[in-house]
Image: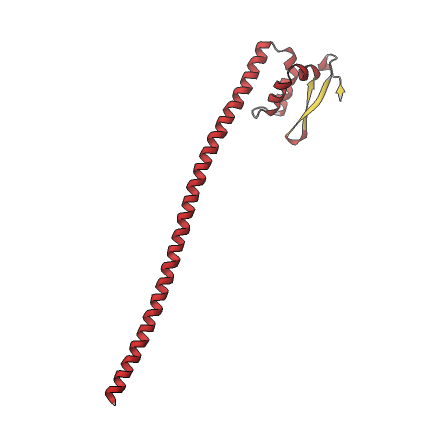
Length: 148
């Protein structure tokens, strides 16, 4: 899909690269050919808006090699730092999950102990009542045998 715009000075552009929400970029053909991997880095960076990406795609042809190298370095450093943060975050998330799992297990054990204690207390009350009833019957038998 080639189209010419006044910005292109007669050079073709391609409407390419889906970014969240289906937005596409107008990337000059020369930029795609010369800076394909840099175009992908720009598309993937999390620190640029759609408009900022468009700006970089349009300005790349007039940038010096030093500027292109610096842009590439910035994007690579950003990617590296994000990977490090993600790795760190995953480690922290794992620790947090382990801590919560331990707390949950302790909570479950506490509930089980409380349920067992309640069951034992209920059982003891039942035994005490049964014991009381037996003692009452024994007292009746003693009274009856004393009366006889």
